[in-house]
Length: 172
Image (cartoon, rainbow, N blue to C red):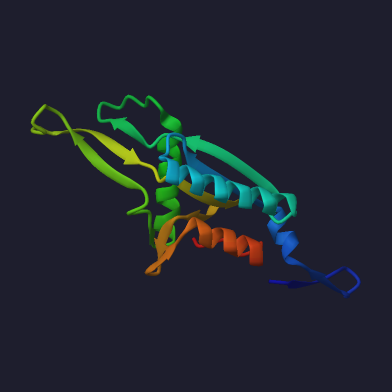
């Protein structure tokens, strides 16, 4: 969307969407050990994002890899804290927007014992094969995939939004 700004002389300055896109950071999160079909999808999405970046639509593109799951120990051992902190940041962002991470991101409790009896001991976070985040001024303003207002927002939806209106890839 274009915005009209009046300069110090009272003249209209017609800004474009590229101004809004300039402060946008897009991060593609890829599962590191994905099955072959999922790897092809990851590659296609990455190629499309790189094309958008080379066209100047995505000024700041980052690619990060994550494992399929991370276990959060009930005893407070923070082991691999990075993915856990990222998930918690996503949780906070979707809660503010009254959106949902499930079923794309899963959490479940791991139960101790061979027969799955006993108190929960750990929490397991399962990450999707591919996800995309949009940040403005360091804050998550877009997260794909997620559910928001009863609508599934896919990574491909984010790519389409970036390609048609770089200032509007946000769903949170």
